[in-house]
Amino acid sequence: MQLRPDLLDERSPEGIEVVQLTTEPDVPASHVYMEAQIFTPDSKRLVVHRSAHAHGGDQHDPEHRYLLCDIENGCELSPLTSETGATAPSISPDGRWFYYFVNETVTNGGKLTLKRVGLDGGECRARARETICVLDGPLPGTDFRPSHMYVLSTISSDGRRVATGGYLGDGDTRSAPYGMMVFDVEEGTVELVLHGPTWCNIHPQYCRSTDPEGSHDILVQENHDNVADERGQIERLVGGVGADIHVIRDDGTDFRNMPWGRDGNEQCQGHQCWRGSSRWAITSTGTKQPPEAQLIEGYAAPYAGHVGIDTPGGVRNDLSRSVEDPHFYHFGTDIAGTRIVSDAEPRDQGGAVWLAELGEAGEEPLLDPRYLLNPRSTCEKDTHIHPFLSPDGTMAFFNSDESGLLQAYMIRGL
View 1 (cartoon, rainbow, N blue to C red):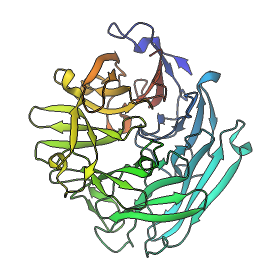
View 2: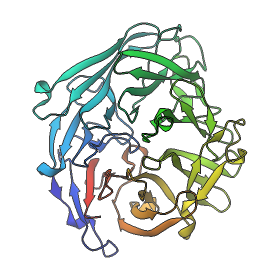
View 3: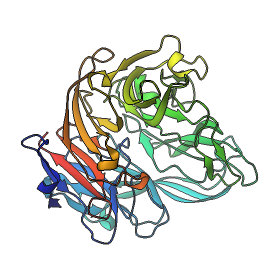
């Protein structure tokens, strides 16, 4: 770690401190995409990755490693994985296990392995490591074999199920389906619960509620009018009036709408997350009139077609209405759902990180929104700032290539 007081400026609040977590001079490093569950619940340890960029990096890069960052021990970094192909990480809600996949798939073939590593100290090779499930044939009850695995996974609040996505095509068919798989970590089994050609960028996120019903909900993104070739390579990520966001139960039932986008004026930017452990969720949108990038809170409503903002019974709350001319992009909340951090414009001047409080769900806007710092990022896709909060909301994390090489940073003293 390296203290970076030079990243603070005259607008930064008193008492905060910036720490550069990764410092290898020749190897880029990054936080895992900010919606991922990569923190222990006590806010003392988190996962970062080396030889990676803000959207994941090359799964088959032999230099790629997931690293455990021990904040209380001087932000010491220790390796969690050694396998080429390690991807889609999640830490169990009790903080005991680090789950990840080893992707050795090829189109219509290969092997996918779900593993877990005990977070009990020691070097990577000495940690308790288990293989949970090996998928080397078609998904049960189907002819589909997954490949081009999604770089993110998500874990249920009881730690019993892990979900991720992948391409299901045979290598000969254009616009073949993608799908979401749910792995039962106690039984070592897997089930395909959702599939179709529009699930190429699914962003699955388990609701972190411990409520018996809410704990089975998964937030998913549907990229309408996307185009993919026979090998699953994306030629167009989304088209028309844009993506919409849904909630589905992890057994494939109870498909619902989030009331965002698809009216010709408002478009979902492609990032959303649950508000802490509640059943409310937040998305970032771009609007033509007024020309803004807003943060909109919402609650799932019954499916009524892909009508987004016009979903009957959809409940919305414009969180960013308390900010003049808002331009927010990526964000994350604490586990209590009372605090939010987001990046913001001007992106052509290095971007900005903002912090705000969250009031009554569905009612109040951002409270006390305030600037923290300029990360001095180039803000290209691979160097996105992607801020998020520790579960307790006292620390914020972001990426920047201000040094000339992408690295992971922390803000503490919030």
